Image (cartoon, rainbow, N blue to C red; front, side, top):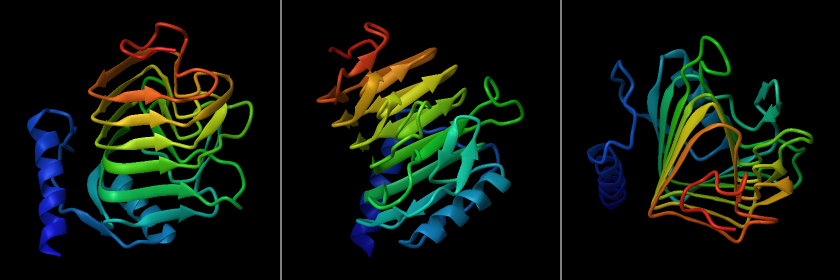
Length: 227
């Protein structure tokens, strides 16, 4: 639909203009991703193999994950770990773990600082990450950033859970949220919204609130995040 394409183009162009989206060194055509779990898994595998790409997610679609399709040293992952620069551009799009599915986080970004030989960069545009549940004792229920680069624009992370970093966990990497939200996530230990083990987290016109038992941890580690 022309209107949908125009709205998505506005979001992507705005992010590029602001310098918020990392562009792969080699340009590729966007990969359209049909609204189902198998198509999204395949698209990420193809993009990783190609050295990075942009995935055009189906507008107003909920990609419901029924099982883990990746694994890491810190537990199962719903989607294949991101090991190259990948942009997922949606429009009212949600990626969610099915309520009846076994425990797993939704996404993991792997960078060379933690996982040698990888260069994971994930840019989420107009996408909601929901329902992730990292296997105990591992952190990062929604997204775990392990030495890579994570950028969220006009996106949200909600309803995820883990021991720490119910919404987002980051270690040795960089996280930037722009006009995005991390709300309604839970941790059994700390960092219900965001847990920063190391690296940098930047909040630009973004909301981190309503997470349990706190919004960010350790206390004071994320500028602009209170409680």
